[in-house]
Image (cartoon, rainbow, N blue to C red; front, top):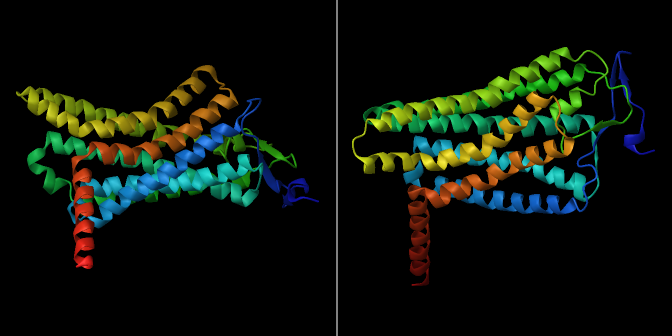
Length: 328
């Protein structure tokens, strides 16, 4: 008998834990495998792009600054988040291995959410960096230091890991009365899983609703407030050319913020307004939200940031010089 067909494991005659979950994915969509092939391409570009950006920042000492500590952290979280999600997703749907062991499912959930939360709060740290650079330019280097940024980034990791460890651990107190629990999502998503339980899940519900303002609403609100302050500060600049130059330093960050938060917020607003969203729409929106920003972030920073382009040119010219020296 296959593991997925085994009876649920009963703990203490109260908690019923399924041997595995069944990830349903899309329903009634023809040629859906092409979507997953597209995600495979996204993952390859994500690994190459973020790996390249991480290497450039690590190798060029000129980029060992507080600003690029934040960029490095974002690229690392992007790379890890995509690696936590996409390979397993492709294995699930392209090779039709939709059953996932209970413990593996919870681990899957934890890592996908942790890296997503770190990405979210890293974007807030970027916004604070731009806010201080534009509103307090003379004090920038005394406020934005490596230790200060290090503490902020460390806090985002510690808080995300602690909260999500609690969120995932609380799944263990739930009973699932069916021997095969069908999860209507593309991965081990928290909402679709805890709502399938057959005992009291009110505590899980509270934790899920707390996550909404803490990890989904607070970051874009804080970012919006920083840009309101930046706009006020820019209005005081007499020269239109200086104003435009200052605003250009924010464009890369604004693009990333829009790509990351607009799909998340739109899904939650629609769900709150209608109390229901079609599983296929949720899956498409969530999968693209978890994957596309991670692919585009290094492209935006590589092509739009002058410091990174200069670092790449320096590294390339250095390699050419060392190659010529070796030949001689």
